[in-house]
Image 1 (cartoon, rainbow, N blue to C red):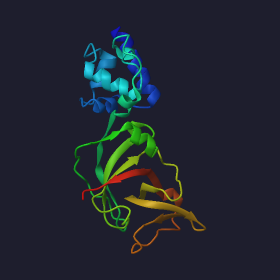
Image 2: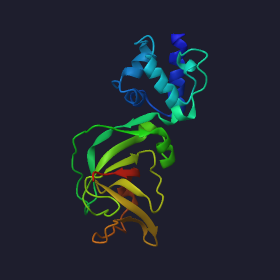
Image 3: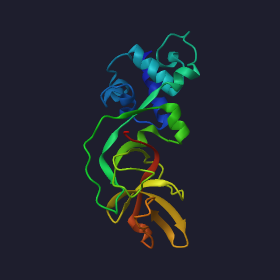
Image 4: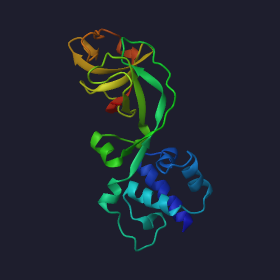
Length: 216
């Protein structure tokens, strides 16, 4: 039975495009917890609260993860309450004139409702990160100190979208536009000039910005 649960959980993680450490964080566990459970059989069984949360997150009956056979399908309301913990990465993207990104201390992660992430168009949860904006060139859209949710899988440019990008080894967060000059790196703050006419090979898109949050 325990082997069946480990196999089922491993299959769900792979189908969802997640990784073991991300699911461990979802449970508030150390990053190796799920890998050890699946690969080494330690712990031997999932704790009840872990099983309930995983069943809600993956939208499957608890019985698939070792619950009682009569538990039945997970209700939509329960599934919608599943939270995804998104880690902060230890960099800050410059929204200034193109300065080198400042190093940020790693802070507490932010938990998002999984339904909200779907509405935002997020892909693999393991590809999501929170970083902090530094500078004012994207005001009023983004301000200095804002936290932004970045999807590192979303590297295909959609003109008008806001992206974390690296240009000439400088990390920044800007809006990408396209016109007769080609791709344009645009600042929402009119006091900061656009960047155009650069070699596209020098541009690396790190990911698209899906959401921002700030202190009031």
